[in-house]
Image (cartoon, rainbow, N blue to C red; front, side, top):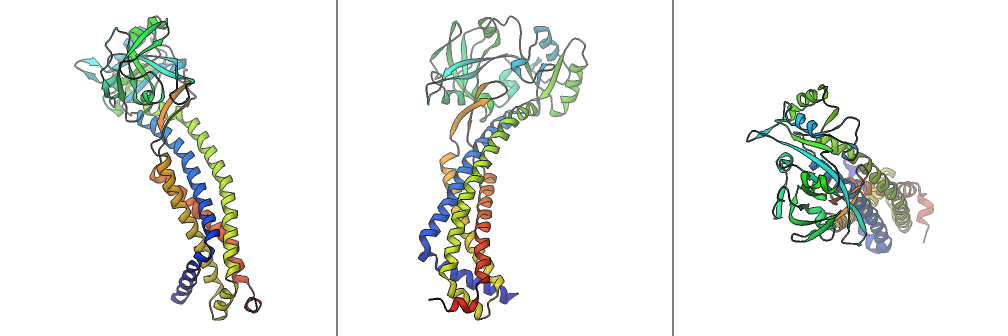
Length: 396
């Protein structure tokens, strides 16, 4: 076994020492694989960033109540009496004896994007005074909160970055009214940062919604209280509602888009990987052809076919890993933290989020590169091991 391993080491080191003589083909193969990794990581970081934005928004101790049969806030509707019964249900947390329950209204408005100037759908949410306490992860980063009863809005940090006219002190025209931007808030990068918030009592008459709401967000005493809370509402004959955890709600909303982005990413990755694979094959065939006599001499001296095959594969994988690491580093520098927005298919409004190049994504991409290296070196490796010794030694 030791002799076999020493043969592999000797041939592999010999192969690597000759790389400078074949640097053109080697660089081309490494760059091709780096390109595959960069594009793959770039596309998948979109899905990872969107998933992170939706996941960080979903809290296990927050429940959302919608009208029964609704799949989103857009298709839901609740009356004032419904919201009162929901706030009085068992399992609801309280602060200063007031239930942590926010009856909310959701409308979609048009605002121009900073990057293109084209209009896009932006969610405008009317909330109750307890909304910030219910979410729990909201932080005011500029200005102040809106005052109840006034035409004032606070803007999510993601929306402020993506859409024009949302700076503190600006006034925006929504419907028939002007609204003052008085603050900007963050939500740990969650989906709430894509929204604009105002007082629900002011938003209702502005959009002719009467005394209706679309959802109630409730802070529970603990995640374990969800079942008690849900059972109390769904068995109440005065209500016709469904209850979901906030974490489950956002996970369901994000599944389709994340799946679509990943599918596109892997399709592009496979197509580019095929091109890189042919590049690796060309490089390794050239490597084997350049060292035909050397390989034949080693085999004549007693080196086995197995070490020859493995050494060629190791050279191919080493080039692929080099390209993979370069591509992963480039993707991280280019994409991590890059902010954009995309359409939420459930609400038909924009969700602002940051690309996320996670360590797991980088490892996955480098493993992808290693597989390209293995397949790119496989056939040249077997060719090297099958070269007739006598014929190869006669080559000039």
